[in-house]
Every structure is written in C-alpha cells, then in structure tokens.
Image 1 (tube, chains in turn blue, red):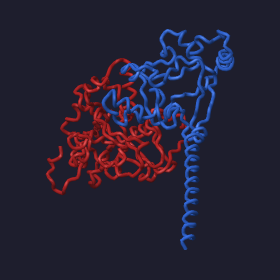
Image 2 (cartoon, rainbow over the protein chains, first blue to last red):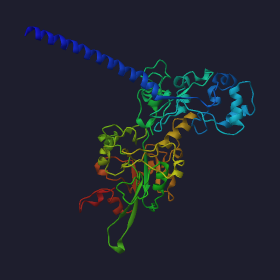
Image 3 (tube, each protein chain N blue to C red):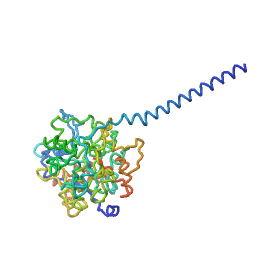
Image 4 (cartoon, rainbow over the protein chains, first blue to last red):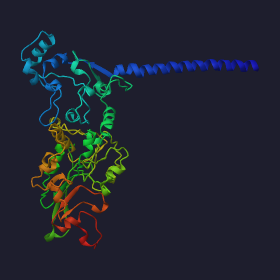
Length: 209
Length: 263
C-alpha cells in the first residue's frame, strides 16, 4: 500500500513539472509571437518614390521648414509640397545626385505629382491645426516630427496592414514606450502635452471631427 | 498659452430663425446634407431611418379650410445648455461613453463618432428628435465620393450623428484667425451652411453672448420663443413668429391654459 502510494505521488510530481515546463514554453512562445513576430508582420515597408535629402535643402533655403511646408493665407497648412513648388528650382537637373536626376526626368518633365508617402497622416476623424501649435504656441516642428530636417535619406515608410496608418502614429516601440517627444503621435501624447500646457485635455471636438 | 486661454471670452453660438420669412423651400436641408457628408439612400420614403440633421417641419393650425394656416419650421440641433447653462443637456447627461459633450468655450454640443457605440440613449433623451442613427454604412454614388467634404469625417454604421453647427467651419475660421494673430472671430467668419443657404435670410447665426452680433438683439424680440422651453433644456435656437398659434405650438399646453404664458 505504502509503496504504491509513494510511487503514484512521484509520478504525479513528474507530470506536474512536465506541465509546468510546457506552460513556460507556451508562455515564452506566445510572448515571442506577440511582441516580436506579430509586430514584424503587422507593418509593411515601402520606399519613398524619391530618396529625399532634407539636410541639403534646409541649407539652401532661407525660411527653414516653412520655405516649403508653408501656411496658406486661410491659415491651413500646406503639408507635403506639390510639384509646382519644386519646379521653381528643379526645372533642370542641378547637381550630380542620381535621385535628383530621376526626379526631374520622371516627375518634372512628365508633369506628374510625386506620390509621397506621408509619415504623419492622422486618421480621418482627427482635426489638427498646425497654425495654433506653430504660430500661437510657438512650438518647434521637431517636437512632434523629430529631427527630420537634418535627415539625408528618406526613411522607410512602414504601414500598419490592419489600420493602414503610418507607424509614426503608434511609434517605434510596440509597447508604447517613448524616448523622445516625437516617437509617437497618438491621442495620449496630445493629451499629455495639452494637460501640461493648457491645464486640460480640452473638449473632444477640439481635435475630433 | 495657459493664461491667454483662460482670458478668452466664452462664446455661446446660437441661431435665431424667423418663421415668418421661412418659405419651407428646404435649401437649408440640402446645404446641410452636402456640407456634412450626410448619407442618403435610394429610397428615402421611410423617415424613421433617414438622416436629416436639419429638418423642416410643416405645422398647421388645424383649422378647417378658410382659416387654415401653415408654417414651416426648420429644426437643427438645439445645442441645449441645460438648466443654468451648465452643460447638462439631455443627451450629454445620458451618454455612457462620453461620446457627446458640452463645449463651454463655444456652447456647442459635440458628437464624437469614433467614441459612440450606438446605444441610442441620447436619441431617447433628446426631446427635439435632432439625433439620428446610422443603420447602414454610408454609400455614395461613385461620382460623389470625390465631392465629399474633407473637413467632416463620414460616419460608420452603428453610431449616432447630429447637427454640429458646422463646427469644422469654426475650426477653419480659427485657423485663419490664429495665422493673423487674433483670437476672436468676426461674425461673418463663422456661419453655418444652412444660414448661408437660406434664400430668404430667415436663419441668423452668431454668438448669443456678443452684443455686436445680430442674434444678440434678435433673441430678445417680443415674438421670440424656443421649443419646449418649459423642459428647461435651454436651447440655443430661437424662433420668431408673428403668429400666436405658431408660438404656442412650440410647447405643450393644457386645454384652456392661459394663453399669455407664451412669450
């Protein structure tokens, strides 16, 4: 009797540790899938049609970012420049950069707009006023957009396959951690800053439409 | 920025609609539909499931032929301030998702479609039937897709929507003001689509708190009244009519109740 009992407890201990082992394997496996494999699958990577050098342009213009990304007379923000703005300087090939040559040949001479991919495009339901942030509150572009002005190459455009949004909205960290103020463009980020600067997150209608 | 936003004067945007001038042409409804990307169906005969932020009602005095009179009454959202104007409007009070809230800076009752989950409590609470439910995803004829207003997000199936006093126009007007380093809007800078579309000038829109705006005086007109005033919803839409039966039909009265109780 006693022998049989002790044997059965031994075997149940053994199966318990096997179950625990499988539990750990499963846990680690699902963590790897959730935190590493899924985020890799979630974003598709696209290249910009032209590898754009912000740094070289910023040196050549007088008015900083606003030389190309200007405000219209009605206060709206022009965003990514249209071809007509580029043509002012790039009617002919100016330098030796092969990307510029390609730009002039494929877009300027054919008079087709460049299908730029907008990193910071917010969803449909969001209203954002650049003018109140840049002019009234005197915020620097870098606070939200990062040091894009000094970039020499266009980084890859990562698009969320489910929502269709750019990765710049969620940010590089899938867990939502931010090292810099420009790492994410989610509503929480807007809310945090608004709470600090204006004392409240504001009514929903302020940014949602 | 913190200090200056505190010192901003609170607005109270509202409307005064002169029913003597309204011909019932429906221009305001059409303008509203196209301005706000309001979906429509091939068959709009069932008014229970069609969406009209601005709706023109036809009132009659219920008298037999020689004395029969009619009146058209355009009805947008009333943007109720609630008792004492504290923002406790009927819909805001019942919304479990805070999808609708009262903006104390402008007095406008907002509706955030992405937050709404379609319980429709607000529709039950609204005494003016100003709220509508999307029973289907909106579908526009293909040619119309490119004509949608980019400043108003289209709604999806399962959410409630209503008149916003063309709030996107306020935002755009403010953008221009900020660029010109102003914080106040001129009266003409922010007008709703229905106001501008009305051919007879029956609808006047502006800041009810601002003495330089036309609505400030018009709302004090002796023939001015509001709908269901005795519910104390404190609506921001005023009506003017020279006819007493019209003014009386703006609220519910007992038979034989003192007629002078209407304004």
